[in-house]
Length: 161
Image (cartoon, rainbow, N blue to C red; front, side, top):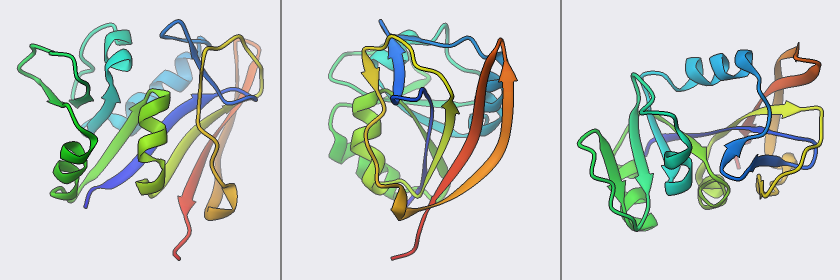
């Protein structure tokens, strides 16, 4: 089974996005995202795929969607079970990059959450799902202030049962 890591930037009320776009402009956090996801497979839903300005370099895009995406470099799955079976055949880290429904689907199977916790609230129409923090070991990676916004990069590692 692939090692599944969810990566997301969320506000104080678990805000993820608004109108299929990122809420905050945090270039250092985008560099963090790039560093964490580069040379890995990234799993996303259709709306997240549409929100990308272009294919992200040095990453294999995997999209869970019922829509047709005619791009030779994008691997599409129309069912969660088919995607999950594919991921079961891998032995590498795979990054789950959103959106909200994809996070919800993969939360029970992810070994790690890599969250940017933004110390602000914002108007949002998409939110990160609730999760039980007691199931994870929490590790603060760093704290930053950018464009007047304070945030932390936090790793949540699922505890062994």
